[in-house]
Length: 216
Image (cartoon, rainbow, N blue to C red; front, side):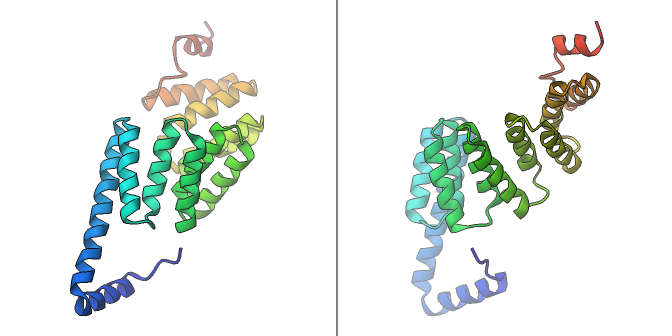
């Protein structure tokens, strides 16, 4: 989607308001209503109330059929309900509207990942990273997809990049530790799990792995 210069947008709106004030106010109200439904839907998503969220996203899309964020968020709600095909359909629509929507690529990659379609997932993560080279989550998720293809070196390289971007990314440390373990490098695995625990995620620095790492 070509993004207009903000000054151009303001000039266009000024002309619309000048010559068609009633039309402009009505259109602006519609955009505000759509945004309100979007925000309410996001709140429902955060509470795990995905059906209510979907209902609000439906209303946002009904008001503004070109609302890429509403399609992306509805896709996210479907994804969390395990309805991956519906999620992918919504991500497709979001990307049709805005081909440089990095988050939608990453989200669609997650849906493909959960369907076991790892090559498609990797392709979407690649696109998200191409658009936003500092997208730590996309590197982390691509690492998981590589790992499921038993490409552990590529997975570790992606976790390295995610951690370089965000040195406090506990999940990336935990994941990298898992694949160091898979490669038989327990020293590095333990170091990563310990670091993740220091950052607040002790999922893999539990009693069993801690004892293994301490050699007891």
